[in-house]
Length: 298
Image: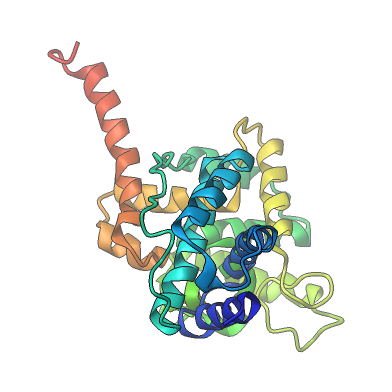
């Protein structure tokens, strides 16, 4: 197969078989465009002509233009592309098979204390319809650990007040349900009864729990701006974002005795190792406490 035919086949595989997100496909599209540009300049008409020496030259070129993490992502994409061709198109070998991506130390997630989040909630004007909405959104995110994309996609029918759970579609179209407490329940019930009707006056059939101005979902960027604005008003020096509320949700549950497996299920993590990074935050705090208070630690 020629290059573009091979790339189209791989993207169809990722989209249909692997259920990759549009954002992931967009990133891979950028990475494969670099590969195709290199192949064109080297006069390589099809993937069969791409040799290990070409792979080495391509990666040297990438290394000179991109930082470490971008370099690693590009290598992962082109390596995955050729692995697909080996399996589906009987390519004799993967020219990138001998190349390994660099390992990175993942930074510990930034978390906010319950007191800091309470301070943010305190500055919101509950006399204003938008204030009630914003308050409800922040409480719901902190109470459930929802991703911002999941929050804005919620429909009113996704909230089950009989069992106090929300249903959401997460990454790779996986459905999960997450419990919420009485505080979040009161917030959502008050918002639905008193404020949401005003937001959907022009769009009575709007299904979304938090509609935007046009009857479509509230945007992720809008949520980010809303949260950061209230954080600044509360005098929080560190930037607060929707994903940091998610980090804080996971950390506070583990701090209060929750188990990692349950947190994994609520966050929708496919890999337990992703959830376990929150235990590293707790370990770091324990080390500080031990060093500060144990007589034999000094």
